[in-house]
Amino acid sequence: MSIRPPIAIGVGALLTAIIAIAGGSGDDELAAELAAKARLAITEVGGEGVTATFSSLNGWPSRHAVLSGAENMDDTKRTAIAQAVSHVPGVGGVFWADGTMIAERSERQVAPLHCQDDIEAILGSRTIRFEESSARMDPRSSELLNEVAQALRPCLGAIIAINGHTDSSGDEEANISLSGQRAQAVRRALIDMQLPAEGLRARGLGSSEPVEGLDTADPANRRIEFSVIAKVPLVPTPVDTPGAR
Image 1 (tube, rainbow, N blue to C red):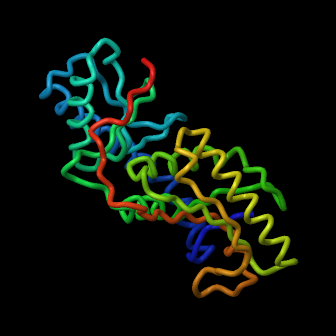
Image 2: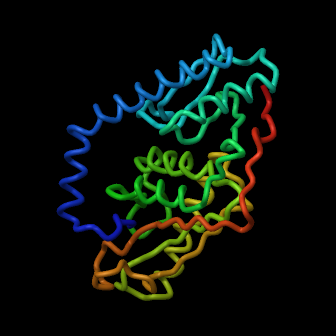
């Protein structure tokens, strides 16, 4: 089972409880603030009728914008609207509800480190979980993995390594196999979320890379980690190839 990275278990549990009790309102306020700024940005470029929603598929507040209401607009107008929203400070990825995704504005390239930081922040006090001794992902991790997918989208074009880790208990050959199967399960799930398969690399490392400062047998070494690595200098286009509308 994958456990949270190098953070004291008791402190992590306490932080999770605090976030569950008090953090939600702050997230709601951030999402509302981003939505208000996005409305102004859309109005300034003549995007009347277009709305920006800052929530995930399950209704949780998000800094990623989903735009709707431009079904009858041409691609030039859609591009201008989406780029205006992407310029709003604090906004992550920008997507159209019909499936079209815009890239970051061309004069502001997104370095892989940006996505790496976002992923580490998302997984700082939460973890992608699996059923005991299995590569079957716990259904409760689907929302967390969706957040990971959203954070990775701005860095499409980079290589995204998905690394499975275990503690040192049990047979190492079996540990390598299980960690690899879990990494592959995460890769398949991300592909199902429309991330390009060719940029995703999954591998199992077993117990060979324990969390710094932890005993190799500590269960906190059981985890999934992501490494975002540029394969070429990123030159984002204004809009990815439009999807069907």
